[in-house]
Structures are given as C-alpha cells and as structure tokens.
Length: 249
Image (cartoon, rainbow, N blue to C red):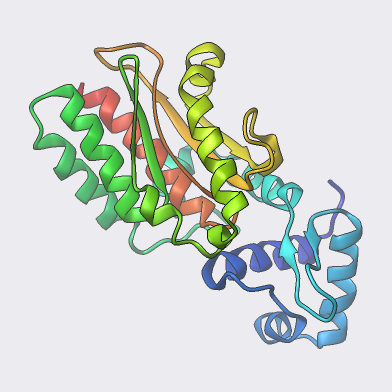
C-alpha cells in the first residue's frame, strides 16, 4: 500500500494507543507524540482514512483502526519472522518493544515444563496465554478443543453488546471442525475481523500457532480476542508457546 513513512508511523501509533486505551485516538494526542501541529496530523489522518486504514466512529471523535489497518500493521510485524521468535524486540519500527516479554516467556516455560503429561502441558500453556493476554485461550488436544478464559474475554469493552457475545459463541462452536478441515499450514496464523473464515461479523482476531504433538502433527494453540489488541506481544507469545510445546512434547 502506498503511504508515506510518517503516515505509517501515525497509523501504528493509532493502533497502539487504541489497543491500550480502547477509545478513539485524536489529533491532539498524536500531535504531542509527533511534535507537529494538530492540523498536520488531521491532514495525514484524512489520507489514512481515504486509504481505508482508519475510521471515524463518531462525528468529532478520534480515529480507530479498520481491519485493513490492522492487517497492514500485522504484515509489517511478520516481515521479519526471526524477530517474532525473539519477542519482536529488535524491529526497527520500535513498535514491538515489550519489556515484559522475556518474563512472560520464562513463566510460560516454567508452567509447561512442570507438567509430566502432554495434555496437562498444553492446558498449562493455554492458561498462561489467558493470564498474559487477557484473551480467550484455545488448543487442540486430540479431537477435543480446550478453551479457557471466556470470562476474561467478555470483560473487554467490545463485548458489552450481547450480539457480539453471541457471534463469538457461534464462532467457537464452529472452530474445532474448521481447524480440523482447513488445517492452516503456516507456523503462525492471524485472522483479523472479517478475515475470519467463520464468525466474520464477530469483530475478533484469531491468532494460532501450529505445532507437532503426540496427538497430531497439526495441533494448534492460540488466542481469540478483540481486533483491538497488542498484536506484537500476543503474536510473539503464541508463537513461543507453539515452539515450546513442540520441543517439549
């Protein structure tokens, strides 16, 4: 997509601010961040909106990312796969720094390595992802789909609308057979909002990692959460969980 470097930085700032605060991001906030006038920011935001990367949910409100904006961001994160496995801490965009990553990864390893059974190890990894991301965690264990953290997911402000909750519930009903039939092939798979092959209207992102286990060469672990989330941290943790389980099991 043909946008300038500054427009890209503004887009990424909107995504990160919105992930943290769950409120539309205004030009005044961005102007302070970039050291330019609000008028300059508004002009750049207008171009990003024309490109379909951000949207204005209400008149006089700030902007929020669209699914296309999130996809552009995620593609930027995955241009260097090695950085994901290292906690995404060396990405030159400076948007992937997460001081808690090493601590979380270490805690994940301790919880999983303390389990002697494969199914317990997978469940522990899922439970850890729930604790670390606030999303719903999931994994395939044989022919079963293990889910944890549904109450954590539904405390997110996006799910104050009961219709959104129902849409997510329907997605989860169809998820296990879809995983079995589609068997996504990449080590890390990210489906954002409308990209989801099931539950397109649920407004969530599915981030899953494929790994080999005693149950299948195509086992999956991951999280499901609102499209508004810290993709750099969540993607790196999910990928780490998959790699660690494959090595341990």
